[in-house]
Length: 437
Image 1: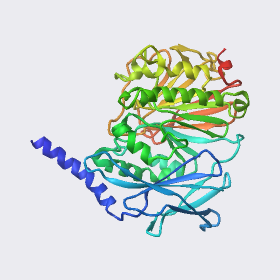
Image 2: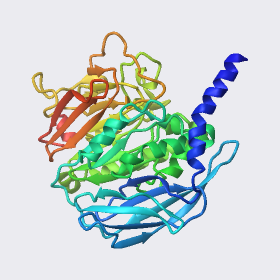
Image 3: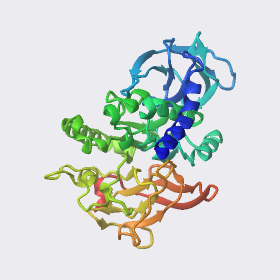
Image 4: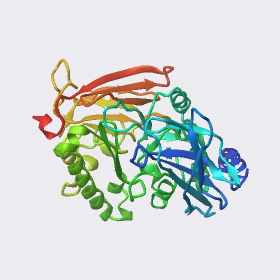
């Protein structure tokens, strides 16, 4: 009884700040974040209110500092699946007619209340530029250790976009979605300045992923479960590993996503498309391979993500190999692991001296140590033959797509005060399945 009461009091202490924050103005915009709709002349602004209000964004070039244009959107009412059935209004406005590469200031809201002023840079047009992205997964509302450093990086202009590879807040549905509200406010200093591109993880599962699908505004018509977009010389594909594990929501989703993935890869790897955007990069939450000391799917030889459902249906390793995916980004394991180029458990380094120069298989990176209440995941004592480097501390990954042939990846350790603890060049003279031979 004493432990139960103590636990209840601790929970109350955690919840009260969120309740207090929510109570300050039902029509006041909060949880502001950006996403990229796929057109460099556009940017989508999403925010939340707790009572009905207009959906307006005022914006203008940063140099002048004045709001010279406005755009209107719409709000949808979201009801959380918890006992209280809390409701909120998710506002979405897509700004049009932006000048690629130009910086803008904006605020969102209505006459009932406005957000503070934020700024962002419209993404550059074309393929002849060098996008810089922050990559991480598994960031919670408690112990988001990497977030202050990511915020400093963002304020210094180090990134063009963020890739959050699943698992938010831990969990957005908890305490009748108050945890989700708190997390979305917490990431606002980053997500309101950069396109915050996401994919679902296992911690988003509750109520058929409703908190994830309602809160984020990704391209396409699948509510962010899977989609793709282009940035510079890269085509990025975000997909859901969770459709393989939460089959109560329908086996058809596995097949539907797999068929969509194949169509998207077919289009992205057409010769004319691959010439313009040779880098094909995927992001999904649960990895195919890992050497962590737990019983997650990636520790099994016949990993579901790698090999598919029983009878090897809809396995992703063969699909990604078939279409020459260059780089596969993962999270879920609360650590950092870089793999040698690998296919079917075999290492296919470019050479002994330069393993990532003209690799003969995809490169896998696991970056799930941004920080959450579940802490870090240990590794097995001895790495697998396909494991190149393992780091067990808090941090995140930087991805710099330099040009059509060079990509730079580095791992930043927050535990070591921002030290870069790993860095590799992936150099490819040839992209596509032809590169494997």
